[in-house]
Image (cartoon, rainbow, N blue to C red; front, top):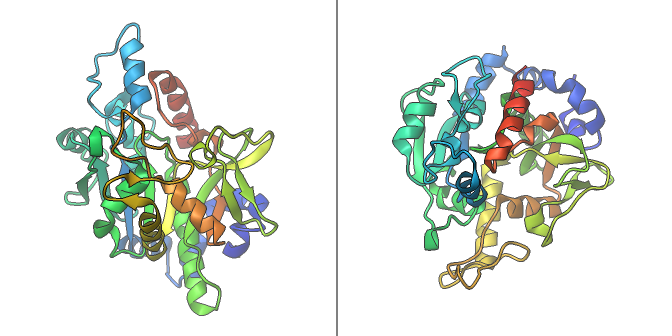
Length: 344
């Protein structure tokens, strides 16, 4: 029998080998007769948010300088750019963002954060990969000065849409998301939350699927209990960070308890946002002379705050190939290779 507390703290080394059993064990621990009935119950309490509204500055620049230039409108989100489909369902090729949206398709209600292009996202991704009618809603991220202010800001703007759920899973439209990693993180959070209801142990606020890599760009620092205490994201460090060896790193998927996420966002907004100046979060990109509308608010800031309070867990269930975001055209070949490994 799996020990979810150990798997997400001191037992990281054993977690990866056990990852295939996590949903089944969570279902049995919750008292359900089978995994399918547990999943239906879990989905009724879960909301999934996929971010498709990023500015994509590097993407637009790569389109501008490509030779030959692809026939792709740079105003369109990069998540609509077509790549090879190795999922075994849907059209081939398929837009990049289909991988992120497929990873959470069966895990709850859906919010797709956008800045336009809803008809294309619906007709090219959501309907072809099997989303049920009415199973999603679009939310437009407002962008002061024409620039979206980060995925933390998107979570703030959509708070009224997800506040009524128990869990929130967040991923990003340019990532090589793995359905198994998202489901395992949700399963672990559900198991730990149910354990908390039976004991005095508080539930974690965040479960972060991670991979083990050599010299990751975003290493995670752990304490003696195996709990994350810092995240090596450049936005939180004021510059680039490398691990200098093997380390755990996040893969772009986050699973939160909704009550804890909401409380953390409200605290950060109270401390670091003003009506006249927007977001001013230490370590994040600040406003510039050509960008007076404010800086950014990232979910990395939420994760760091929860980790500092001992309320975050990591779960070693992800493959290194899941850390394969498309930021420029040059990333496409690697993305296609990596999703082939994930789905293989």
